[in-house]
Image (cartoon, rainbow, N blue to C red; front, side):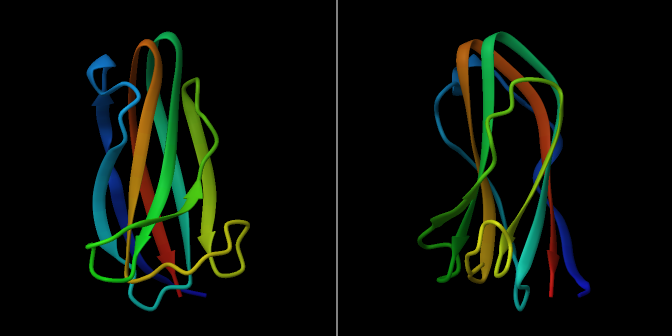
Length: 124
C-alpha cells in the first residue's frame, strides 16, 4: 500500500467557540481518486468551557461535492490529545470513499471552545 495523498481536512490551529456550539461545520473537501482507505488524525491542542465535546465525522461524495454521505464518525473528544481512525474498504469503518471526502465537526457543551486540526492520509 502506498500513500497517494496527504492533506489537512481542517487546518491545525482551527479555533471553535460557543458561537458554533452544536452546529455542524464542514471542512474543506479533498479528492481521493483511486484510494481505498484514509487514515484520519484529529489533534486537539486546547479545550475549554463546561463539558466540551468535539466530534469529527468523515463524509464522502461521489458526485464532485454536490451531495455528501457520512461514512465514519470519531468518538467524542473531551480533552487535549489525539484521536486516530481509518475509513475505507477493509477498515473498521468499511465504506467506499467516493471521489472526495471532507471532515464535518460539532462542538457541544456549555460555552465550549476547542482548538484542533484534522489530517488525512489517503492510501491506495
